[in-house]
Image (cartoon, rainbow, N blue to C red; front, side, top):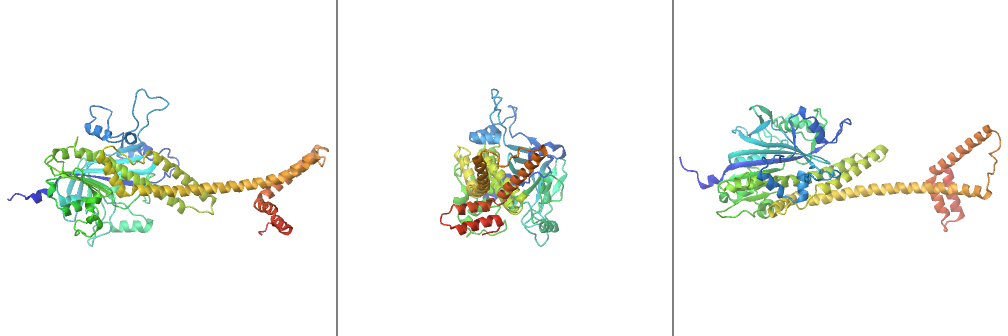
Length: 552
């Protein structure tokens, strides 16, 4: 048997890590009896599902606190640390100002230990170890992020690219002639701790997806993803459940990939382009050399600070398209595959949080925009209840956006140049800054509209009160001139005085109601009366409009 060539060595992935970060929008709680936020209800019902609350990756036991945790913590600026881990703990903190917890709430399930993927029909399945399966909830945001981290060893480079292209999809984009789903894996199976199949994909059920979209005008999620998320259920699903979600973006989930290969310097430019753009280029597709993203691949998507051709290494290349962050390095370099201090540890900790925050920003902004659109679509200006509901939703969205800005919106995450550079590269490709400006301007316009509408209503109220005051001033001055009652209502029997009082009260109420009903026209009459250019005829005509209740 001949020895494998150097090129064949370079096409082997000795260590493969991938992390999916899937943002989902949470629907407002429909059950008024449920008190609390989404994660509080989720935690209260944990006896009915496999998810368990964890504080964070850290631990209260200093013996179990690893160096990788410490390196993760000190990589971020203090205000980012407070967001990720909560405020500092002290024995001498003031009882009036206790330390705050992190606004991020994490749940994890450990009943699924492996993922079995049949990438294409007839191929041998590939099994990946499930490292983490987490749900991230956030304070004040109707948003949850699913994180799945998987690990594999000794894969071919073609298989790794195929996994990145096919696996992270919520539903099929179509169907092949043989009936299998288009662009997704042929079969995905979750494997439990005892080797049983917990759930499997059902992308071959074409009628299910067609019927769902036809009925609900909304995409359906593949069964293996739906089973993982339960008790969260899809918004339009017939499944029972108060905690419901909807998709925010396209079916392709954001993904991070770590590939340790032998002698990465031997990879050709086409290999790098296919690895970096693995989720956008079909593995069987001829490389589109005239595409701008292919022509400008290195300057647009590559960060080559550590891509140095030296014995000391690290020979590590970072590629980011926004939706995908890929790290490729030399499997023979110990620092690259070190899970405690090396690049692998940074990938699973620092860079994962950078990727998570960037997609948290984008998903949150899209949710804010979706709430605005939904509020406008539900508005019926002829229905007072609809108008009041619209105002409440807009003002609540504005208040939440302000809290998001001060609690979650960062431009600087770290003083470490490489960490900050990766964050900016990811955020820029996602257009987070532009999206933030667009959403902020939309919310400001809505807020200005509500403010101007309130001022208009207040102005109308002031006009009505002014008219009533002027009419009351006439009566007050007249009675004040006489200095006494013109009619001696104080004389007579108690019954006569009560009748007189009742008649006077009803008369005054009628005059006030008439003034209120005709306040707009009375205001026009007073304006006409004060117009020196208007003759007596025009002023009398304005008075007739008030008395007759007809438009001029």
